[in-house]
Structures are given as structure tokens and as C-alpha cells.
Image (cartoon, rainbow, N blue to C red; front, side, top):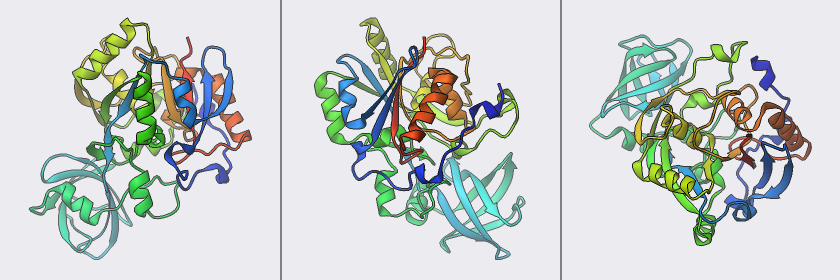
Length: 342
């Protein structure tokens, strides 16, 4: 398949720049991947579509304040985006500067601490942080929330709260698992009171999630790697749900990628590691019957994933419907609830 098969025109005014006033106030577009049927509804009605005994699986990663302003020892201005904390003293980071820093270059961040460029790994730089303080502590003190590139305002206190799920627990992501942003505590309570089961996985979303596919053939694309973990408790709940004839719903493409990464042997197994799984049309899903997700960027790997889940023609039609009906797109936008194509 060609990358152009996953392109579409989106008016700029449909890119949500700010979250809805209340987390669960977004619209919800339902798509049946088997019949292609569409239904316009609201996220607050989600409980009507999830049955008692069904299982919702959330990604409990927490977005870190990964964006740092700094300068080289020569005085040149730089911006770093920490992609991954490697250990107590090392991070992998994207660096934006007029010239790429070479190994041995000294960097100063926020006029507060220094780092040295040790090596380059593809488009990332391995930095050694010179500080006795924990790296997360440094980021929380001097860093900024890394809002997506299509959101044009600088992160403020509202973003610090709303670009984070209410169940975020394990720090490590540089982008939010955005389908989860719609849930508030009241919605979670309503689901549980109905008898819906809840479980968690972790996938630390990387900056590569925003990168469009730039090769003509999608199968030539090199997928970015992300850390994931699937606990045994979640595996047990999945197996019990399926044994009872109920449905498993992944809340977000990141939760879905974690589950599929843990299922490459043919059955889901608890574990953790790196994943660069690239899900495209023709992929056979092993775990999930239903996907809750936001609307994704043109030519993105996530648009290819939902096309694999629901059918490419169904997604094209659903996205055009969403554009015509002026749904809000991307991280702070509205949501879709997709029944998997048979």
C-alpha cells in the first residue's frame, strides 16, 4: 500500500487547540467495522455502549516535562526533547539547533544543570546529565510539557492537568495516550458500577507518534521504538473476559499496540520490553474487539493502525463524515469507538 492511500485534507480550524471544558464533554463517533455503520453521539454516553463484564484496558503512562531549553558551550541556542530516560545519568533526546552537536559537546539547560553529548543514535542523542539530582526531578523543575507540534500555544497550567490522564501513574511518555484524556473519575466510577472491568498496560509514548510516514510504500517505513509492559493481572482479566464471551476494549492505539506486542507468539503473555510493532491493513488482531481512539494525523502510522482495525474504506468514510460534521481532531479533539472488522 502507498502512503498516499492514508492522506486526507483537514481544515486547520478542526485541529483542537484546547481541551473541551470538561473531560467527558467531547463528541463520540461510533463505527462498526463489519457493517460500516456510523452513529453520531457523545462521549458521556459511553456507558451505554459497554456491557457489564466487558473489559476496558487503559495505558497508565504519565507524560513527563520532557522539553528543555538550553545552549551549547559556544552559546548557540538549543531545544532538547527527552525521548527516554536510560538510567540515573543518561537520556536519549531529540535536539533542535542550528548545527547538530557533536560527541563531547557541553550543553547547559535552564542555566541550572549541564549535560554532555556522548553519541548519536539515528535521530537521537545520548546525553550524560551532570547533576546529583534525579533526572525526573530536574525535568519536573526545569522542563515543560511537550505539547504536540500542531498545538500552537505554549504549555500552561491547564495543559499540565488536561494533557494527562486522570489515571496516569508511571512516568515516561513524551506524548499523552489521548483517548484516555476523555475519562474523568465520574466516568470511571459509572463504568465500574455497571460491572465493566478495568485493567492497565503501560506504553511510554514517544515523539515518533507525531511523525508522518515519509516513504512511498508504507512497508519501507522504520517504526520508532517504545517501552511497554503488560502485567499478569491484565492478562488474567483478558482471558477471563474472553472465556465469559465478553468484549475487550483498548482505550487508545497505544494500549492496543502494547497488547499486540505482548501477543506476537499467538497468545497474550505478560512481560515488558521494546516494541516497534507497525500495524497496517491485513494485520490479524489477537486480543481486542473494540477500540476507543481519537482522530489521527494524515499519513500517520496510527491512521494506518485504525484502518487495519476497521477497514481502510470504512475509516476514509468515517473521517470524511467527521470533517463534514466538524468534529474536533487530534490530541484535544473528539473520539471514535470502533467495533473491529471481522
